[in-house]
Amino acid sequence: MIGCLSLRRHLADLAARDERLPGVIDDIPDLPVFRKLRTPNGRWKVTTLLDTGFQAEGMPVYSDEEFGVFLENFDLNEMDPLRVSGHGVMYDGNHRSKALLAKGIKLLPDEHVRINLKVDATNVEDYALAINNARRQLSAEQRRDLVIHQVTKRNWTQVRVAKALSITQGRVSQILTEYYSRPPTVPPHEPPEPGGVGRKPGPPGAPDPLTLPRLMWSGPAARLPKALDKLAKDLEACPPSRALVMLHRSDVASIRHRLLECIQVLEARGEVAGD
Image (cartoon, rainbow, N blue to C red; front, side, top):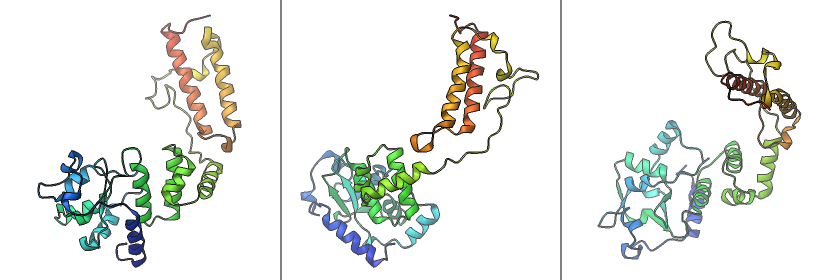
């Protein structure tokens, strides 16, 4: 953590590459976006900074136990500066800000805050992810999950993920190949109860829509059972390597059951028109 010499050197190198405005108050841009973060005498308000704090999505958050260890080893004199973007958002320093407040430190001099005007609303997520990845000692499993999250949930390109996490695009591609090729985990399936999936069971003796004679369906509804059967076969035959989003096979019967139940209700109301 903070006491690790190699990590300190790495962060020092990282800080040296990061643009920093001079630490005197006169050289900080006199803009409303920065004035609201500071006191009249030029101190940074930790609570206000934390209110603007940007959390990189997908980055693991400290558990209570982990934060307790972090707080125990926290030292203001060894703290890496908080980083603020050009649009007044603290994109690095959420845990440090919480530690400061826990120790009763509510104001900070300029030496503990760094402004990077290159960071704005269009790239703050990239910078936040990159600098947190450099500081946090993520396990191989956490880094893999982060890659998968950014691609599948955030729609990032492989190049963008590789740059933010300081890994090669080939490594990103390898992680995604392993992720998409692994067999799906099929949860235990329980047959749907009469009366509808996820609903309270119907009254005693209520018919199951799946057992109703198909002759009672008319118009467009008469073609749906056949189409649903074809959909089920297509889903079962689709290999995981060709599908980015897959339904578990156990879900097919439930989907079919619910749709057929909807058809029954609509026809009972006369809302399904015939040919």
